[in-house]
Length: 323
Image (cartoon, rainbow, N blue to C red; front, side, top):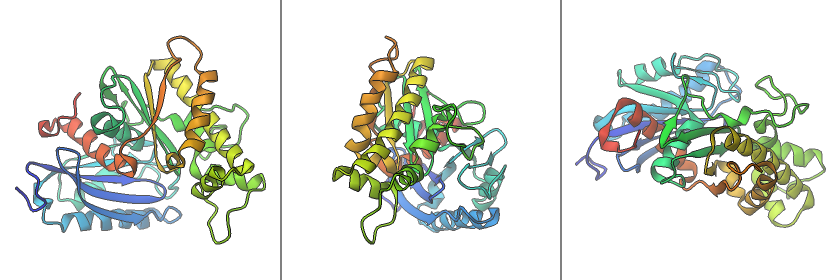
């Protein structure tokens, strides 16, 4: 038994997004035994961002449980290239084809490192321990600074050749819509991400309460209080998400869509219009009836999923994460 009170191997997990870089040691039951976190210096150069990752890893390596770590799992905002170990997150412009896997492997003394997209990581987590458990066909989404997703089909996690399968955030749902940082137009992310919910509300004349930053959380607070401008911004985000979910259901026949990430914390002001819009977009018999549920693992899903995806890829039987 190692000092955290659990037995067996551990996986060190990293969850890297445009807002935060989180790390944890994860046991075979999906429990987070130690956490570390830094804000993502997203506007800075590549090495500055990597230093934040290195600081998180250093805290994990200093923990007494580190000798039980057998691998590192990374769930990163995308796109990622798992085949080459590189990342190019849309919301971290300093990282373009950044060699994250070799840099992390160097920092952890050569342990095996498995990279996947953050949406795929969340799908792995929610299918293993969360709201998609028991479903063979599921879409799991993260709606935060960006919008990502991952798929479970036929009971197996579908990561795709590069680790980006299910990246619903960059499905175009408004053909003549605003330009997205990815280069396309009218993407789900360009409409439904937290920063875009706040931007649209501000553009319509909404103002946050005094002393409050203009964030999606502040918009959600106003929406719960009945502010029509805030409600309209969330309704538009919900419409974009519904269109993306319906397209996915039509393409691959999912039974449940799990929605997590910071924006999902808005609760009913997001989920009620999302379910309503979905009835109008998912109309064919095999696509209708998709359940939309909040993620069960909250902000821990990225870390749990990064560990689960690594355990799957490396065949770590103690983690019992399925195919």
